[in-house]
Amino acid sequence: MATSFHFEHVLDFTPGQADEILRNIPALPGVFALCGARKEDAPYLTQTTDLRRRMRRLLDPPESQSKRLNLREKVARIEYCVTGSTFESSLVLYQATAAQFGYTEARRRLKLHTPYFLRMTMENAFPRVYSTNKLSKRGLAQMYGPFPSRLAAERYCDAVLDLFKLRRCYEDLAPYPDHPGCVYGEMNKCIEPCKQACTAEEYAAESEAVKKFFDTRGESMIIAIGLEREEASSAMKFEKAAALHAQWQKVKAAQALADWIVRPIPRLKAIIVQTAAQETEHAEQAAAFLLNGGCIVGPERLSTLGVRAVREQTSVGSSLFAQPLMLQAVPLEGESTASDSPENRAAYVLSLLEKRAEPSSDLALLSDHLSLLRRWYYRPEKQRNGEIFFPNEDGGDKGAWPIRKILRGAARMVLGDPKPMAETQRDAAKEAAKGIKTKILHEGRPDVERVVPVLPKHR
Image (tube, rainbow, N blue to C red; front, side, top):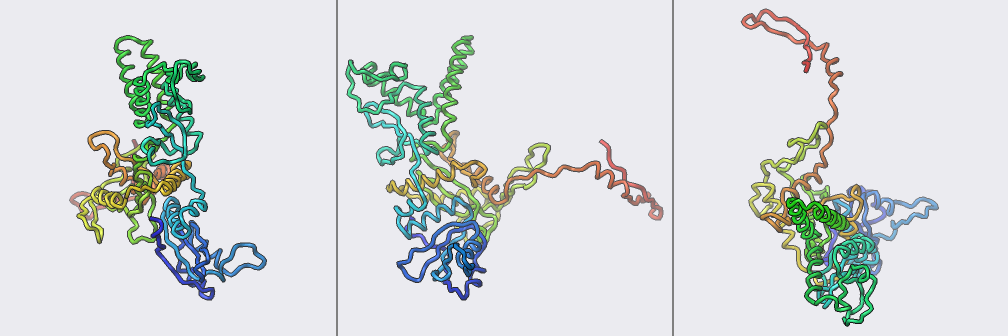
């Protein structure tokens, strides 16, 4: 995908016409490359929040005795493309760098490192769980993540293993009755398969329970404990119900250590909505990306025509009028399908993304995309632009996309969040109304009229 990358705009550059050329470059976020006249010259490649301003710093006549980098006399061609968000800029910069220098150099230049995952070795006779940042084709289905750091992965792993009695040792077990064991066995945190203290079936059942916990992010255990707690409470067994509630709280605390995105790599599927590039013809569009099995595909333009988000919201409370509304759709030119509703247009865009998605067998490419995802997703919430939407996990439409949620997110990207309405100055309005007068006509007597003051209404 990256090797076929090409910039959208290409301009020839000469120092004599620099001012005219730079004036035509938009002052928008984007990625650009400054290329020399010779093919062997490596281009200057970077991303910026203002293409025109950044290029002027590099291509304007140099100031006297200035040590600032200046490429005015070395550049023969300018290539650039406009992006709508930092997320899109990072993805475009990665593709452009890989196309120019190769994947290995792109990985080094952008400082991409594989995120940490939890790996469960179900193929082992005695499965265990450990944190790793090494991807393997055989173990992708049993790798849960990504996590923001190794510390976060190990903290979640320890919290989950405290709920079970799975082994934590790293050795290849050859069980025999006189095995010395370990400290976890002494603390009753392991069923000690090394000492043959359990059967192979018992250890396999414990392993399946741990795997089910990771697959459901703890929901399977929370539901089971909750039902058992309700039964104990209904049977007036309050001590048992209290113990179950303490265990339920412990499971919830362990579940909270993993973010919502933590799941097996093949099930890493989501729609990421970002602001679209402003140079597009239709201003009512957002940019949609598909995360499919850890790889990022996109963008596709998602129209918000027919979805109206009210900018102002009353300060006295929420209202239906302050939420995005579905209006009658306006067909877009060039669409190959009948767009009779915003939902149909959104479904069509998502189908285009899914058609572009192809399973990748390149673990290095998968690692790079997961690194870009981790870098964007685990930013502080105030610094992370855009929204992410996962497929439905329950109900009759399990696995389907939440179309309306995606449309509302796209509307927020285009129109912004609702803003609080300014408070009404009632006292000032009453004072201003004192000098207002109106004419009153007598019914049946058009020739008689009176001028009276307008009195404010009192509640």
